[in-house]
Image (tube, rainbow, N blue to C red; front, top):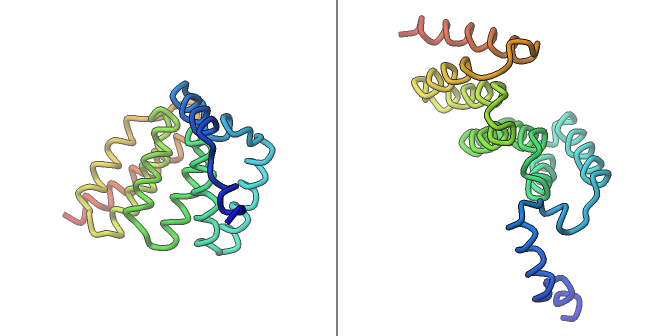
Length: 162
């Protein structure tokens, strides 16, 4: 029982955690988890994802999102893992968080979310997502330009189906 009790936070530790979070710090900042540790975990999650171990990648990405919810890559990894597992609504939720992590400046999460919506048979919602993403991004960023091109092509296909 002593081992289980040692895993619980003391009142002081809990107050420190809450105060840090209320002050805008991330869990990793409050708990002292280093950026190096987060990057190592990200490399592990990415490796799991690329090897097709989507469930395990999802677990690690989810932990990373808890430690630093402001990191776009962590949310995109979680969303991609969920999408690969055909957990489309959960993937959409994570893509939305990725978009929020960029202050809605990056159109890419919306394109991936639109693909999930299509898999769910929600074509009209996919069209709305695509039209929204075309208003986002930076014309000087080649990734955003490429995303817009893909979105326009997908929108054209969806509109032809009507």
